[in-house]
Amino acid sequence: MTRRVDPVLRGGPGFRLTRREAEYAGLDLGGAVLGLGAIAKLPADGEGPGFTRRRLAGVRGAGVEIVLDVADRDAAFDAFERSGHHLVEPPRDGPWGLRDFRITDPNGYYLRIRQP
Image (cartoon, rainbow, N blue to C red):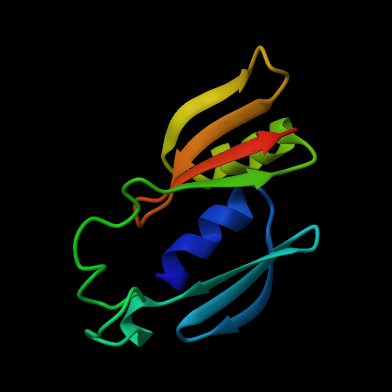
Protein backbone atom coordinates (compact mmCIF):
# COMPACT_ATOMS: atom_id res chain seq x y z
CA MET A 1 0.00 0.00 0.00
CA THR A 2 2.61 2.59 0.98
CA ARG A 3 4.52 1.97 -2.24
CA ARG A 4 1.41 2.71 -4.32
CA VAL A 5 -0.10 5.66 -2.46
CA ASP A 6 2.79 7.90 -1.51
CA PRO A 7 3.66 8.82 -5.15
CA VAL A 8 0.05 10.01 -5.57
CA LEU A 9 0.32 12.35 -2.62
CA ARG A 10 3.79 13.57 -3.49
CA GLY A 11 2.82 14.02 -7.16
CA GLY A 12 -0.29 16.08 -6.46
CA PRO A 13 -0.40 18.09 -3.26
CA GLY A 14 3.38 18.03 -2.85
CA PHE A 15 3.87 16.00 0.31
CA ARG A 16 7.51 15.50 1.29
CA LEU A 17 8.54 11.96 2.19
CA THR A 18 9.98 12.12 5.72
CA ARG A 19 10.16 8.44 6.67
CA ARG A 20 10.25 5.30 4.55
CA GLU A 21 10.24 1.73 5.78
CA ALA A 22 9.17 -1.52 4.14
CA GLU A 23 5.60 -1.23 5.46
CA TYR A 24 5.32 2.46 6.41
CA ALA A 25 5.64 5.90 4.85
CA GLY A 26 5.57 9.25 6.64
CA LEU A 27 4.59 12.26 4.50
CA ASP A 28 4.68 15.94 5.49
CA LEU A 29 2.87 18.90 4.00
CA GLY A 30 3.50 22.16 5.79
CA GLY A 31 3.79 20.51 9.20
CA ALA A 32 0.78 18.20 8.75
CA VAL A 33 2.07 14.63 8.86
CA LEU A 34 0.28 11.71 7.25
CA GLY A 35 1.39 8.23 8.30
CA LEU A 36 0.62 5.34 5.94
CA GLY A 37 0.92 1.78 7.17
CA ALA A 38 0.43 -1.49 5.34
CA ILE A 39 -2.68 -3.55 6.03
CA ALA A 40 -0.45 -6.65 6.14
CA LYS A 41 0.93 -5.41 9.48
CA LEU A 42 -2.52 -5.45 11.10
CA PRO A 43 -3.70 -8.47 13.11
CA ALA A 44 -5.65 -11.01 11.04
CA ASP A 45 -8.71 -10.81 13.28
CA GLY A 46 -9.69 -9.68 16.74
CA GLU A 47 -12.26 -8.36 19.16
CA GLY A 48 -13.21 -4.73 19.51
CA PRO A 49 -13.49 -1.83 17.09
CA GLY A 50 -9.89 -1.79 15.83
CA PHE A 51 -8.75 -2.43 12.29
CA THR A 52 -7.96 -6.00 11.31
CA ARG A 53 -7.12 -7.54 7.94
CA ARG A 54 -10.49 -9.33 8.01
CA ARG A 55 -12.41 -6.06 8.52
CA LEU A 56 -10.53 -4.44 5.66
CA ALA A 57 -10.76 -7.38 3.24
CA GLY A 58 -13.68 -5.83 1.36
CA VAL A 59 -13.81 -2.56 -0.51
CA ARG A 60 -11.44 -0.02 1.02
CA GLY A 61 -12.06 3.66 0.83
CA ALA A 62 -15.84 3.38 0.62
CA GLY A 63 -17.41 6.27 2.50
CA VAL A 64 -14.08 7.91 3.34
CA GLU A 65 -13.17 11.39 2.13
CA ILE A 66 -9.70 12.65 2.99
CA VAL A 67 -9.44 16.44 2.72
CA LEU A 68 -6.03 18.02 2.19
CA ASP A 69 -5.58 21.80 2.40
CA VAL A 70 -2.88 23.28 0.19
CA ALA A 71 -1.62 26.83 -0.25
CA ASP A 72 -1.93 26.75 -4.06
CA ARG A 73 -4.58 24.50 -5.57
CA ASP A 74 -3.51 25.25 -9.16
CA ALA A 75 0.11 24.26 -8.50
CA ALA A 76 -1.08 21.09 -6.71
CA PHE A 77 -3.33 20.23 -9.66
CA ASP A 78 -0.55 20.82 -12.20
CA ALA A 79 1.73 18.47 -10.25
CA PHE A 80 -1.05 15.91 -9.92
CA GLU A 81 -1.85 16.07 -13.64
CA ARG A 82 1.77 15.26 -14.48
CA SER A 83 1.59 12.17 -12.22
CA GLY A 84 -1.00 10.48 -14.46
CA HIS A 85 -3.28 9.30 -11.62
CA HIS A 86 -7.11 9.16 -11.70
CA LEU A 87 -8.99 12.46 -11.54
CA VAL A 88 -12.55 12.27 -10.17
CA GLU A 89 -13.58 15.93 -10.37
CA PRO A 90 -11.63 18.69 -12.12
CA PRO A 91 -10.65 21.91 -10.38
CA ARG A 92 -13.51 24.19 -9.51
CA ASP A 93 -14.17 27.35 -7.59
CA GLY A 94 -17.15 26.79 -5.29
CA PRO A 95 -19.66 29.58 -4.68
CA TRP A 96 -18.65 29.45 -1.01
CA GLY A 97 -15.10 30.51 -1.91
CA LEU A 98 -13.36 27.14 -1.66
CA ARG A 99 -11.17 26.00 -4.57
CA ASP A 100 -10.76 22.25 -4.94
CA PHE A 101 -10.38 19.12 -7.09
CA ARG A 102 -10.95 15.45 -6.27
CA ILE A 103 -8.94 12.31 -6.96
CA THR A 104 -8.84 8.65 -5.92
CA ASP A 105 -5.66 6.92 -4.88
CA PRO A 106 -4.73 3.39 -6.06
CA ASN A 107 -6.46 1.89 -2.98
CA GLY A 108 -9.79 3.59 -3.74
CA TYR A 109 -9.61 6.38 -1.18
CA TYR A 110 -11.30 9.61 -2.22
CA LEU A 111 -9.13 12.70 -1.71
CA ARG A 112 -10.31 16.28 -1.97
CA ILE A 113 -7.45 18.72 -2.48
CA ARG A 114 -8.56 22.21 -1.56
CA GLN A 115 -7.34 25.74 -1.15
CA PRO A 116 -9.27 27.54 1.58
